[in-house]
Length: 259
Image (cartoon, rainbow, N blue to C red; front, side, top):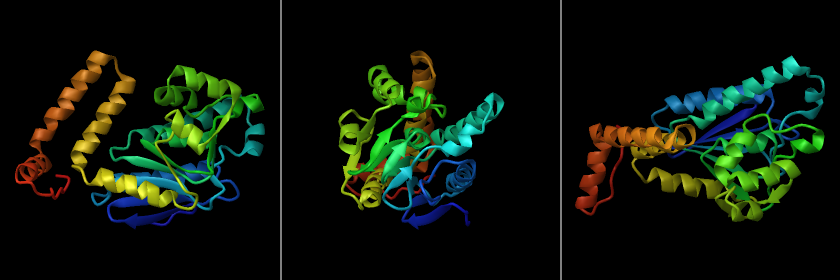
């Protein structure tokens, strides 16, 4: 399927989605729409076990919203825009398959909010990350004030959001905002290395683990533990579990098929 602002490439069982919306790959509505449709297609495709989201060039991953367009909004228009962004980011957050953000440059505002809705973040060493909205008299409006504390805890989240500070990639890794840093120009290969490591495992186990992890952020502990128990037990009705156990007992490499 062809999209206006998103390129699609398949490598093994990994779908790579590349945003190409010059000059800054801003997360405008048309970009969100293309990404949403590409993610829906990846979700439905049994041959896709992992997704990478990146962007064209090496200057911008995503530079956030189009600032000129924001100036024209009134309260009703701003609320509608925020709710549309929320719907898209909730779609990304709830994907059953792991999603890796391969951050190849500036990752600011809405760009970081998108990355926070991914499962894992890999950044090129020259990348900069931040939620600088307060410098414009704004605040994060695409989930940043909710998902950043999930990742970093309240202390770092409040510090970064209230100051609007940008972090270099290695600073971001030091506090847990990104999980791996690559040399410039190699972020896709770094993300592919992560995706390949994930895909060596039972795909259904990975997907159930993701559901359980998401539940931990949305439910009280007792309910989240109930959900974990249910998801764990559901895997005993899969062929993949049998393949994994038999391969382990026979000291062989499992050949998972996601069934």
